[in-house]
Image 1 (cartoon, rainbow, N blue to C red):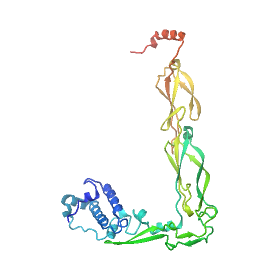
Image 2: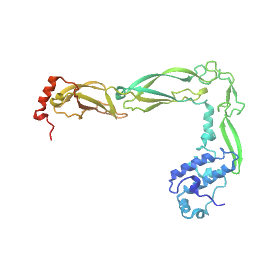
Image 3: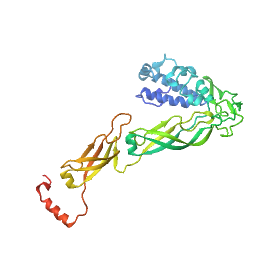
Image 4: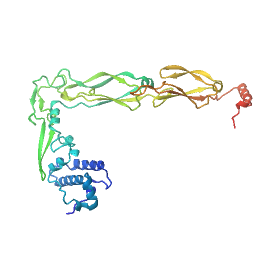
Length: 369
């Protein structure tokens, strides 16, 4: 039977990069791994076929031979006799020899060291996500916030074990205290052992015989707590910070999750943010623009005086140095940019109208050609 094209097997084009070839192979290896398809000979054949294609296309010399001569150029290159051979060749894909830690650990039980860690503790707690509204003033210099949250906390009565006492445990009868269940399957490639955490004891190897009366054996209780958040200066809307181990406590002594704090910038009454700069629209009268003046404008830290030079044109930006937002994780601050706008009155009196008509006749009041 003629062999299929290696590029076709992996579903990539002939110009595919090594990273694209590796990604395609990982996907197929996960899909057709014998442990995920026990007894399925068709899946085993596809797994072996994909491995053979990757072994050639990931090797520059073999790939060049194949591109030039096809399968005929690889007659002296040996394939794989069994799945163990496949694993031993692809340490960059599978993370080591067959039976060690690999990309399949998440599906097939992980290494012995990982399973031992799982037996030592209960189930991990979940993460919590909260939104925190902050003003531009708070962003400008940084701030400290206190927030009340409801979460699962470790039970103080049993110290998170879920048991009434240290002797209130018995060995799990399903896994005999190992914390894992082994399923053996056979194929043409040999014998495979699928190792998974025991569902009866959640991988701990122990069952609580006398539950804690405070938490009913859960090892945690619902609680309300206040957390202190140090918000750095210069954060943006959509930025987040992670508080490690501050989330929900895990069951039966499992590690706590995290708290993810998402920052929401509150729209400001006066300012528009532009990076670490803030923009303020200032309206002055026509005489003030012509003659010059001194005005008081708001800033993020209070009010400050600003001098308007004679003849200032509308649309010009005046810079107030370092009156903006402090840079995130670095020294210095942005500026406050004041945009000059000319106030044009909508309604005027008859006397004002006559005065403007006379003013319009003056030479400097005419638009230059």
